[in-house]
Amino acid sequence: MVEFTMPSLGADMEAGKLCEWMVKPGDKVKRGDIIAMVDTQKGLIDIEVFDEGIVEKILIKEGEKVPVGTVMALINDGKAAIPAVEPTQPIVNKITEEKIIEKFIPDQTVHIKASPLAKRIAAENGIDLQTVTGTGEAGAITKEDVEKAISQKSPVSEEVIQVTEKVRIAVAAAMSKSNREIPHYYLATKVDMSNALNWLNEANKQRTVKQRLLPVVLMIKSLAKALVEVPDLNAYWENGLQKKTDINIGFAVSLRTGGVMVPAIHNTEKMTLDELMTTLNDMIPRARAMKLRSSELSDSTVTMTSLGEGSTELVFGVIYPPQVALIGFGSITQQPWAEKEMLGVRPVLNVTLAADHRATDGATGGRLLTLINQYLQKPELL
Amino acid sequence: MTESEIKNTVIKLLKQIAPDKDPAALQPDDNIREKLEIDSFDSLRFIVQLEEQLAVTTPEEDYGKISTLRNLITYIMKKKNEPNA
Image (cartoon, rainbow over all chains, first blue to last red; front, side):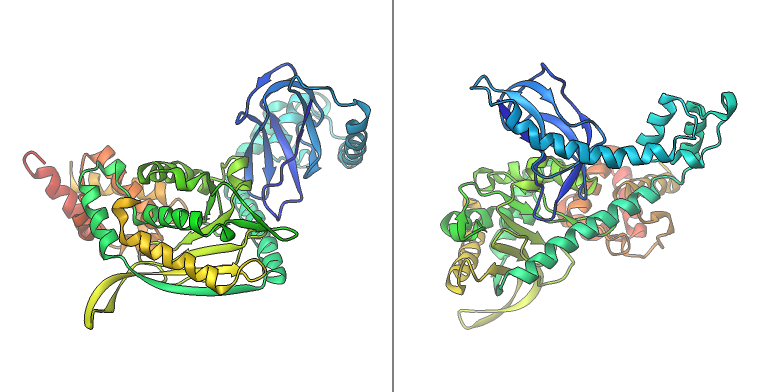
């Protein structure tokens, strides 16, 4: 039997609200299946399961908010059954605790007469029944009353503000922890992007508009290849340095309304440039719509941020704990460049590293930046 | 397609990419990307949309010709009137 728990989707997450079960007892599940939807500070997240088996029991009801690590369901994987009492004990406590809070709310609204359907629709749409005038029998609130209230509610704007605030709070918590605990050191280097951009230009001529590559995929791939050779920077700092076998680059995506989401690109070093572009085309719009999967939010082993064309030249990041490195790519700008005692103008990219000095020293960080530069000089090999 | 039809389509596409901004308020010579804060990724999405919705293919070397509303519309009109474009 396997316990399916509320996952931690980042150092800043303490609890999550279960919105919807996608499975019921008796359903067969396999690794990677989405079995629940959870509301977190990072939006509504699809939660994946990592085991194969049959859903034995659902322990948390839809609408309940539980701390990270709480057992939410039991999955029968065909292996020896775990003693039934032991794991359920703490769960029961948590559930009752939640129940007390939950009960408190209905008690307040006891005097409001509303049909069960009306109550459910109101809860789903964040409508406070106390603000709704009932037109049903003896002033009871009907489904139509709630629907009217929903239509009168100011469109999405309010919801968007709420989500933006939540993201702001999540970013604030993670970044405060980082600057409080991590002794950062910073390094920077300049990369001549002539080769990379010429190669990209030619490569894109062979492609349809939809298949075109952006310079950022070259940056992602060169970083992934460099990390293979400098594994100390693809790691967590948790009671010492814990190197990670997979290279899952967390790619910072800024939200248009403020805030940032950092979905992971799984096994980045194994992807081709075209696969990376396809991944970005799928992931960036979902990140902006706050529709990411749990594995994308929890599996990053390192973070990269790319400022993109026409933006600032240089970025020194704040590490996302418990990771130990953040690599920043500035915008590519035309700059004077001295080489072989000649002065010319080149497209120049500033690459920076913010790293945890508890985990590594400047020499290690310097090696990473040098390798990134070397890989970007040979884009045909990426 | 008339100039105003093209303009309407362009504004509609820009609104999808920058829903928090008002592309209809763009002045003809405003830099679209700067005004609407569109990054390289969304800029490519917009060019893909131009192809899908208006059947206008923009080679990379022409990116500089579509930076404002005025030259974007001129560019589309020209492409549409070119034989075999």
